[in-house]
Amino acid sequence: MKKTLYIFNNGRLRRKDNSLYFETEEKRKYIPVEDTNDIYIFGEVEVSKRFLEFISQKEICLHYFNHYGYYIGTFYPREHLNSGHVTVKQAEHYLDKTKRMQLARTFVEGSIEQMRQVLKYYRNRSVESSDITEILNSLQSFLEEVKRKDMTNVDELMSIEGHAREKYYTAFDLIINHPDFVFEKRSRRPPQNRLNALISFGNSMLYTTVLSEIYKTYLDPRIGFLHTSNFRRFSLNLDIAEIFKPILVDRLIFSLINKKVLTKKHFEKLVDGILLNDNGKKLFVAEFDKRLKTTVNHRHLGKTVSYRRLIRLEAYKLQKHLLGENLYTPYQSKW
Image: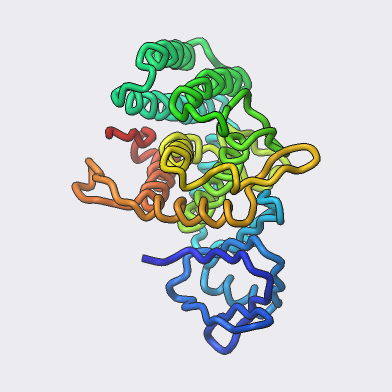
């Protein structure tokens, strides 16, 4: 299995013959390029044109985050898997209001179902079961609203998804129950408390992971269906990420806090918000990477696959839907 490289130190990424190395003032470390899936840069890192040419040739995406942990952008190499037919079909499904609505609705249904699955898991562990049940019932109502046959507007769909997620977030305080990690309300750029800082950082990590997996398919990441394709560089990764946020980001956050892997010492206060400090980011990234490598049983394949592989399989399913081979149904966890 190929690995993801995370760079937190300052230094230089360079090419030497047919290999790569990362160099700091103190040492040089060679990177096994054939085993590298993608690279995340959190430090101040210089890259050369020869380096970019080489990783493009080796089909490696390069994701940039700034000092505060905000996602900046991605060096997305020229697509090595090109299919004009798939691109045309993807654009066709975006431009056709009915086809786009069908996919957008499916992404929202899948997202809400995953939220419900997470809450059922914690309710079964006796976490304020009556309160969790009330939230589950509300999410079921939102789900039924999404399935209304007369809904034809993606903006309305996004609004329902937003309200469903707001309701879902009210369960976080019940599940975590920790004075240092109170949810209050969703806040972004900058997050206003530690829990929101974790959600924002985790979501950014997931968006880029999905983007790396889309790169290995014939899909165009610029054409989404739930998230509008406009002047934003990428949108399809945001669609697919909706299916995996509850099980990959939210459950990881609950685990890190409940096991005291992350505490208030891993955050820093800014003038207008709170963010993870360097040690906090390193801990979160290490655990997120471990979660992506965790395997689960895949009912249809009859074998275990990693969560990262599940994301790629989700993209493949969407591709088959666009080509008229199979109707897209989102992944649904059953634990």
